[in-house]
Image (cartoon, rainbow, N blue to C red):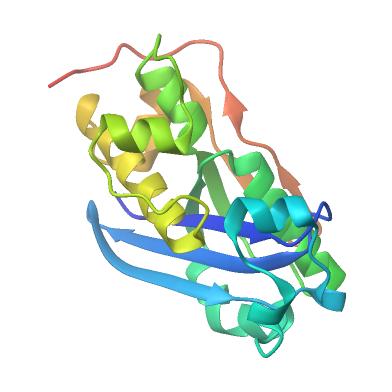
Length: 203
């Protein structure tokens, strides 16, 4: 079970306005590294609602590098990797918009969504938000801090794999009838559901 969990926080309603990125690296089913980087968005403009959500404002990041500089440090985590995010359509969109904003080429990776995985793995829960799932599985969470959210995402996916008795991300997607998305230079293919699940094995 090898993958990279990802979370972005944004400064405003523009998808490319990254102000924080968090990464949790999973190797052989264990979290082996976490990364947290503050980012100064272009023009350094923050919407009050976004500040209310994550607590980051323009003064806090005014001396931080912009995304194009941070990307040079984190790109290797993505290239030819499997990436997971909670509500991956948002985080992958943020990444694509940020890269496009700085005229940076897309890396090549596959991705899937821990939110979708949770909905498939544990049907009937009252909520599949990161906070609710973290509470259910006793995961410590400092919500809307990117590294903490990424780590919670990773642990939720690992819990889904344990529940269904699978050892790889590909097997988990097969059991849950999920289709992995892809990002590649010039475009992407969205992650989503397939029609027919394989019968799950439970522990």
